Image (cartoon, rainbow, N blue to C red):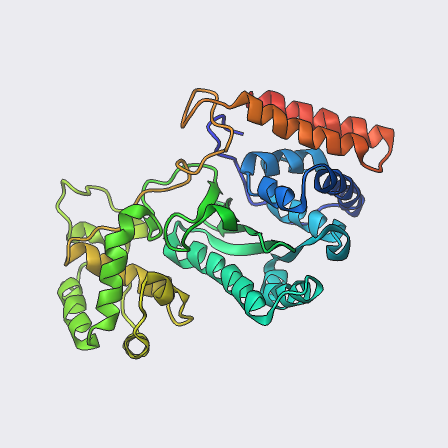
Length: 374
């Protein structure tokens, strides 16, 4: 793992061996029990939103820290280990098809926790919006294939989801925590973990994109014929393939595929959005008919015609590990916080209901992980 808080997450196929997963579930249960007893159910969700702590936990459970399975298998083991009635919190969703069961599982959990119908609907909306943001508003070339929703009986929630890039064969993990965000469309993440910073991505949730968000909403709320005129201005050059033909060489001298313009706009969809009249960017993004192409087209028109530039900066460096970096980038390591995190996991291992040999191996894995990151 890089000392600056960027984790290598190569895509690995296959499944964790049954003998390993069984032990991961057993150890997970022990760690969960002691942390919820010594601290609280909400604190465990907060810890999982910290990528460093999550990474260390995965290593302790016996999984390779550099693999994309760090996310999927660790979350799977935790989900199987946790009984909502016993712990007062639960995990919904999972990898692939399991992620699509998140809404109905939130409903089941909400009934166990005696949530109102409106509260359950709010939580289902939060789950859907977290996925929509990372698949549509943040266009970094990674398509989501894993989504878990963490939920406590107090109403605190978190999200751990992961996207894959089939071209690079690497994954990118996104962490969310409800008490740390004020908006779904303004820098909502607690962390984004990836193998490396990318040169250019479209991030419509960055503060820099606020003006582009407003223009996007104004564009769809205006008569679609005006939007057609703007679109025609950008597409009248039939040989234009990327924004390089539009921008000056001083602005961009290298062809960047991620900036490719959509070849067309679904004008029936634009009419539907116009009829709906979204009040703000979150309401626009929440519409099921609004996908990545629509978001990108509106962002490009905002930029190239109206001069309101969205953010093309990759936030994976800005949202780095909570404990800082070895070289003081982006800030010095908080050794006290790091030691506290380590001790919490170590205490959970020592008090877990597992054999002495398994305890020693788990503590050794934790020691190795901490040594690498000091």
